[in-house]
Image (cartoon, rainbow, N blue to C red; front, side, top):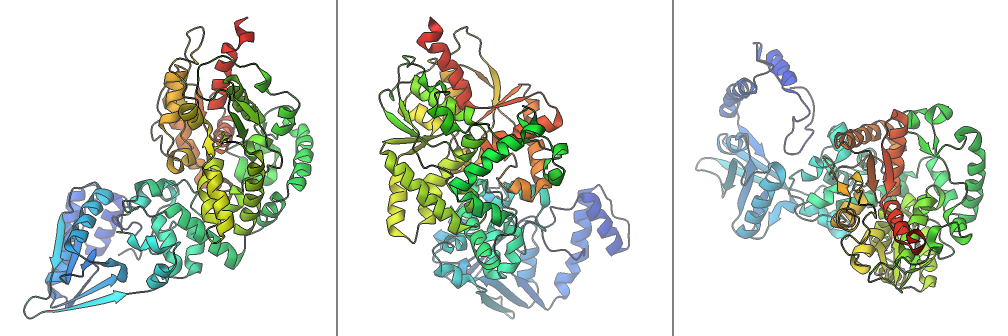
Length: 589
């Protein structure tokens, strides 16, 4: 009636308020329909369309499953229109993709149970219809649709997307979808699965725009009932788009420059000096000071570059890693560990890298900083620039191999996910580099996991000496929570090891809106997501947000500074380092 396509696979009119529905019904039916009473609207719709079913000469439906062993069509709906369409008109046509074919009744029943729970949190849909052929005097026709599906089946990277049962759970948890809706976040199929299947069903051009709205938070993969690796597949689609259309300027030039460590060293040194008249010693570059970036910075201040990168600070002894061991009982004492800082820690937040080194050395761990490290390649990877991502990955693998250590620790959850998961996929067609990536992945741990699983810090071992606990809330980074499965580890360190008071954030699994370059490409969406996170943080009543990821810290700090909120954001390593100092022999003396 409105000339729109559905915005959601299960709830097609979810983008409309009841008042809008009432207005449409009033205009269409020529009589007043309530703008507030949903029950009246449902009755009006039922009465208006019931006669259409009885007058129709043909009914066209889809199918949720086509059961091969019996020729049965399974259809699950909640409002009953599907059953009327399939049973009343004399001709019933079923249009279904070839992926709807399942071998047995047992397979269909498994799908049915999973579908209702994942789509609408029901034990069973209201109407579950099984059709084994036409009724006497009626016709039934089954049309199997390919439309690129067999091509997907032939590609290992995308084959699993054909397992989709159209529950739309991926859309329900998607932060950008929540902000812009399915008419923007999708073509015909919306949500994360829509970003994957659209290039095959409707062409790469149709999928090029929507896929750029994915901020790689990985939430969709955590709820998919059939374990489709949607985040990885979306990045593969992004790489296809970049290969066909190229990466847009100025991002292309930035990515090309970023692959050169020597060039970036020069540029960062120049930037650190050039910013001084603007920052005047403050940790932020504010939007009013950079008019060219007003759209990206009017709501979020940008961080100032560090005057000295982490490697120089560690080399010159500025890091507290020179402190003697604190004598805290742990299982990591005596180990040698390589520190992978990540480029944000290296260039923007070196104090966080120092804190990690200080904690590890305080536990009796020897920390080495491998030469030759630059960036893990996450930035070009997330932009679809596979060539530059591979180049940076090879350089990183080689540098870390030369360290020749048993454990490699990083305080950046995003970098850990890239090193342990994305490298293996990036080199899937290169056996020798894939093998090296797998061997490296086995050594890499995020900082909190190392302290919990290897150091095995005991409860209370880093409690405040004066007995005063800190009150804080914890922001789970998307890569930490959704990609690495980190949740218990930081909370154990905060509550049990340090004895601090942790108040959980509402919607603590929801993205803060950073997403790397996403926050620059789609600042309006990023701003709304960030403000939602900051409002939830304020509601806890605490004045301290702790996280494990530098991108989130940068984003949240920038938003707090721009809005004037008096809330601090810190890396968990900084809190642990403070307690390590309290426990050191120097502090005790």
